[in-house]
Image (cartoon, rainbow, N blue to C red; front, top):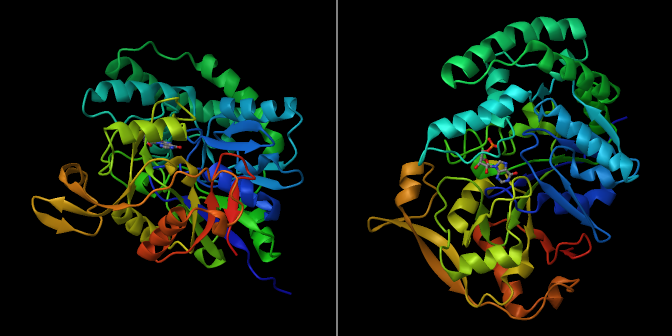
Length: 429
Ligand code: IMP
């Protein structure tokens, strides 16, 4: 007997921090399995439930739901210290309600990855920094692809760990001492904790691909939870100012072992304005009062690093590109309430490059740096919308803004965030 597949993929459509955690949490009651498939503890997915705020950096945002399965897929880079800190925090608060499964094939972020992340950033110098989160993500993915990485399964077997770590550390110590003038890392200082991490993670390790295959074939509702966002994608983002994983829809398959034909719906999460953390092009960034107001009203400070986020207006050219890249079926529009009282709302409809009008995303960092946004100004609203429960309750101009987004992108907005809490969400029929 075959069941209808029920697999949703949720991806960020801008430069991250769109409020994906809240959307995942909001959809959570209908979901059976929550899955993260790329990235690591560079994410910061904030969930506010019953007045309590929980920020997940590594674990899926569905962890607060009792009885659900939460999966860390093979595409992740897992920082064991972060993993154990997050799981024990949930345990201590009595919130360890979901079942957690970790792929043995996920890669391990080791202490030297975090060191190298910071050292490389410093060495890049002014004007060349990426502005990474310092969580060791890039160096860990480098090791994965150069086949010098440690996978979760390697932590589980002390002999294998010893053997692999011996030659890996030799190479790392050469880099640390010769290139960065650092002290070498003593073997036991890395090996002993890594062995303990293996023991602590072992109970969670499972064949996640097989678990997911079974869940899909049984028609369970699966939510694949993307971290970061399309414009930070290693291939399709604003390279080199990107993260080191496939953050757009395609990454969900390599990162889990599921197949593209398993997918039923792609949910693109779009923030009602735009933010970016770290360096790199951002055509609609607002350096005036409006940018400051968006930062203040939207609480736009990094959930992982605390850095103030760069803020600006919605960029329809970038979003069109993002919708295409992700094959978006629907949009979850977040933080609409932050635009309340902003006066006229600017929307970028094209770019101007030396007098030439550009209407498609020029995915080239140098060009992106030089172009100027062409804005249309839409009327704003002043009414408090944080208690609106239906689309019809929104002020006419807020409704018009949502409709403008749908029509420009040709993708329906099915969910609208009007406040930080799970309950402050309008679901359209
Ligand atoms: P990394 O992922 O730490 O290597 O950082 C690379 C770039 O991605 C930097 O610009 C970071 O600020 C950005 N980045 C990484 N994770 C997130 C996120 O969860 N939200 C927003 N930006 C992120």
